[in-house]
Length: 85
Image 1 (cartoon, rainbow, N blue to C red):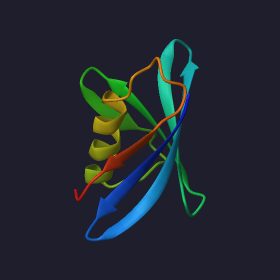
Image 2: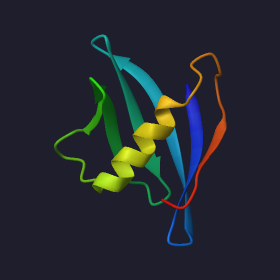
Image 3: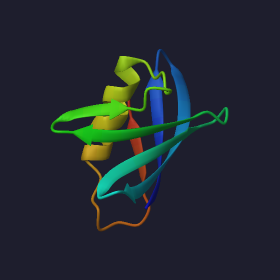
Image 4: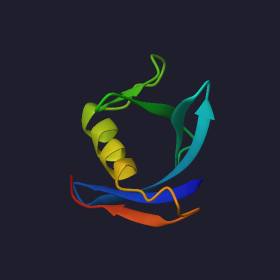
């Protein structure tokens, strides 16, 4: 599943691409930012986590995780907006 979301914070908007994959029975989300940086997110219980080598700000991790939670798994692609976090 490929998804594009728009993050907005302090009046600055940024497009983030998400790709959903399954890794050893765990659903992970690869996050690709406009500058080429990537991170991998996964959910542990109700908490969104990131790999040790990924250094996303806590607000950004939470905002992306909340938007992922709202995604309908039946849709193959969609656009979402995370407004003024």
